[in-house]
Length: 595
Image 1 (cartoon, rainbow, N blue to C red):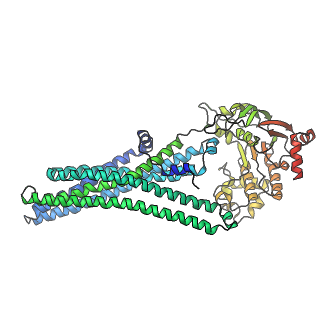
Image 2: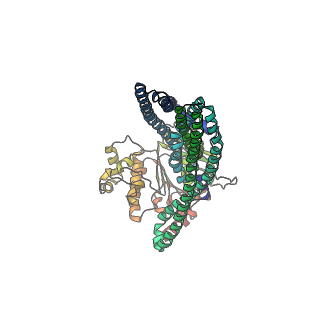
Image 3: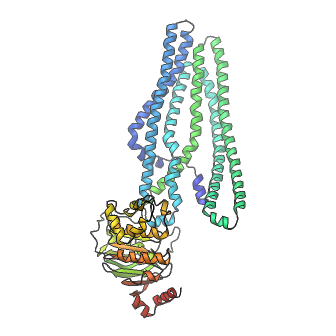
C-alpha cells in the first residue's frame, strides 16, 4: 500500500511564496520576450471583445431609431470585424502560449533529469525510485495547467474585470453600484465552496491513491495471489475501494456543481435587477436603451473571469506544492562532487591504494552510525586481479563503491597511481572504469546500442571483434536479429546468462583501466558461470581488476584474495596460501566445498 508519507505528498497543497516564484522565474526568463508579446495580444483580444458592447449600444441608440441603414451596415460590419479580430488574437496567443509553456515544462524536466544523473549514491539509498520518477513525471505534469494556462487566465481575467468594470462605470454609476453589491456574496460563496471543494478533492485523491496502490500491489504479487487462490478475495477488496472512490468522486462533483449554478444564479439575479432597475432609468430618460443592453453584455464579461479564477485557484495550490517538491530535489547537492580546482586524471596505470580508510553510511536522523569499514589499508599493483570475500555485510561492496567513488571515505584516502581521487574529477575516473554488477542492467534498445553504451564512438566492427574475444558472438548470433535484437525494458527478453555476458562485453568495449565485478556470476547456473568465468579471465588481462564474490570458484585464480570481516581485512594472500593458513578463508572454503 501507499505509505503515509507518499500519501501526504500526493495530497499536498501549498500557497505560492516569493522564493518559489523567483525560482520559477529562472525558467520563465528565457521566454520573457514571448510573454511580452502574449501580454500585448491578450490586451488587444480583450479590447476587441470590450468594443463589442459599445458597438451594440451605438446600433441600438443611433442606428435603429434613425433608420440609418448605412450606419447600421457599417456598425454591423465593425461588430463582425471585432469578433474576427478576437478569434485571430485568441488563435495566435493560444499557439504562442502553448509553445512557451511547453518549453518551460520541458526545460524543467531536463533540469530535474540532468540533476538526478549527478546525485550521489547516498541520495538513492535514502530515496525511493518511484518518488524520483514522480518529480519528473507527475509533479511536472501537475504544474502544466497553472504554468501554461494559469498566467494567461489571470491576465485575461484582470483585463476583463478592469475594462468591463470601467465601461459599466462610464455608462451608469447607479447600475454599477448594483453590480458592486453582488460582489461580497460572490466572494463569500467562492471562499466557502473553495474550502469545501479542497476537502472533497483531497478525499477523492486519497481514495484514488489507495486504489492505485492496491492495483500496483496486486500486479506485483500476482504469482502469490494465484498460488494461494486469493483472486476472489482480492476482487472483493478492490471493489470496496472502487466503490469508496466512486462515492468520493460524486461528493466532489456535487460540491463543485453547487458552486457553478450559484454563480450562474447570481449572474441571472444581477442581470434581472439590472434590467428591472435599468428599465426604470430608461423610462425616466436617465439612460438610453443601448446603454442598458451594453451593461448586460458587460455584466457577462465581469462574471466570467471570477468563475475561471476560482476554478484555477486549486490547480495553482497543487502546482505550487509540486514545484516545492521539484525544487527541493534541484536544491539537493551531491555529497560526492568535484572540488572547484579538480583536475582530470591522466591515463591510469592502475595502482590502487587504501590509506587507513574508514567509512559509514549516512542515515537520516541518526548520529550514531555504525562503521562499515575501519582503518582499511592495502595496495593493488597495476594489472593485478584481487578478490574480496566475506560474509554479507562485511564491507566488500563498500570497498568497491569507494574505489568507484560512489561515496567518499569519512577518514583516510583512496589513491590511484598515487593521486588522491578526491582531488580529481569524477568523470575522468569513471571514463577509465568498467563495472559489471550482479543485477545486470540493460537499457531499452538493441544489443549493439547496449554494447557501446560506455563508448558510443565504437564501430560495429570493433564491438563484434571484442564480442568474439569473449566468445559472446555465438550467443548474440542465436538471437532473432543478432546485434540488432531489441532487448526490451531492462533486458527482460534475454536470459540471465545472456544479459550478463552482454554486460561483460560492454565493459570490454569501454576499454577501462580499472575493472570491477560485484557478484557478477552469482545469479547464474553452474554451466553459465563456467562460460562467464572464461570470459572474465579474458576481460581482466592487462587491467587492474577487483572481484567481489560469494562463490569461491570465481576468486580462486585471483592474484590476491582479501578476506573482509567486520569492516576490516583480516587475511590476504593467494587461494593456496589462505587455504594452508587455516584461518577464516579456510572455513569459507570448507563451507563452499561442502555445499
